[in-house]
Length: 81
Image 1 (tube, rainbow, N blue to C red):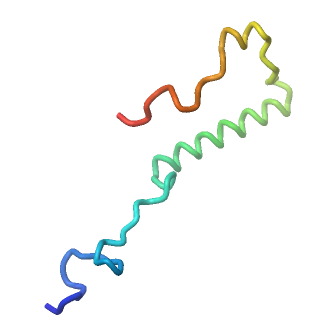
Image 2 (cartoon, one colour):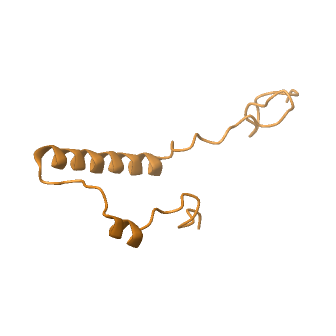
Image 3 (cartoon, rainbow, N blue to C red):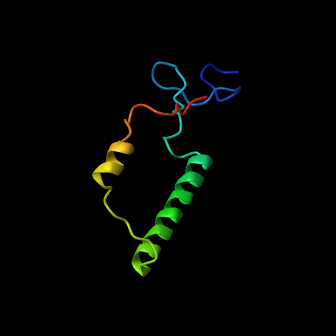
């Protein structure tokens, strides 16, 4: 074996000798792609229904807004288990 050879388990290394593998970009996993595809399909269906008149989107009344206030973006379900 020669120093710095391609034998063994090692992958490419950066100038500091550390593995240069980067984690996959967010949203690039098969599960994320599947979820995104489902979301887009649902949005397409809603747009079709609005266009044909079978679904109406309206503003909430003040009473509904008081009963169902906007959610905080940072709180809610924890995505990690």
